[in-house]
Length: 378
Image 1 (spheres, rainbow, N blue to C red):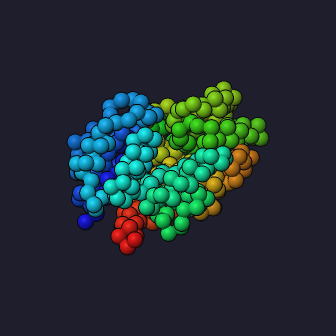
Image 2: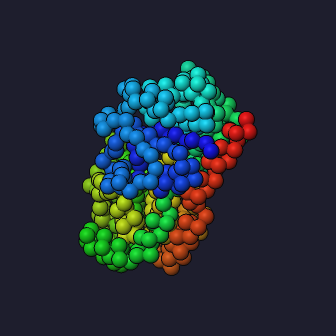
Image 3: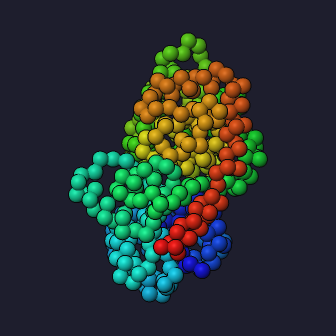
């Protein structure tokens, strides 16, 4: 049986369930993290509960991960064998390149395992380097068609690209969904939100490509065009280097109450989804966008752009709305529509919650099995 060794940066909580499933299917699996955790992305106290082998290279908070770590050599010599397949994710440039180099010398198989890369202009030198790097890999694993198209731009053959079917733990979220009314009351009471108020939510790292200014402008349009006083709330979960639009929307808001919560443990985020009625996610930089999966499974219709990978989960007018990027006017129209027609919002909420049946990590496991078969046949 193939031995899978996954190399990534931190033990992100949204990967925990997937790694467990992989380990059950491939008992010899090893999971290597270059860092212990980040404040908002950690398994917390679940380290004692995991049922697979794991190694953490460093407890340093050096998130750039540019230092060489000698433990890589130890891992290659002790754990790898002729049946090993390395899955190389965001592992730090030096350590990742070393694994790739040694894989080629010792004839190990290696796969680039990517949550996705941001689409942007690349100069010719960088483009050529990426072409060479990506085409040397035995395979690529990436979520969604957007990710596939990204790697095809570098000349990677389509048959070498496999879908990771990026998913959260749908069964864990189902437990929260079944207790949605309890968590709805709990969080609304905590935030002093009336049970009858409409609540939208945004969960994000505040980066420029998340386009929070489009949400800011949409709210401003709603405020200026409203002919009557109405009650609406926005829950903002996240923080980052691009939080200026958040300060601006808080400063200018009159009728829309904004609740900015900078840090929430991943395990508690479903409670805030439960307290909300729909999600707005105007990002133009996510190759997937896992928050879309999460919100839908909690019965929240999603308003998102048509260029993120997760937009394929949103059926326009059925469980949310798909809008062009940088379109605050259209976002404002969709928010106003959901406010004006609560019966349609309820209908869309029921449609949204069924996502767990058709998009989950079992599909990712099946894709990995296809990849392993592909490698064996080469």
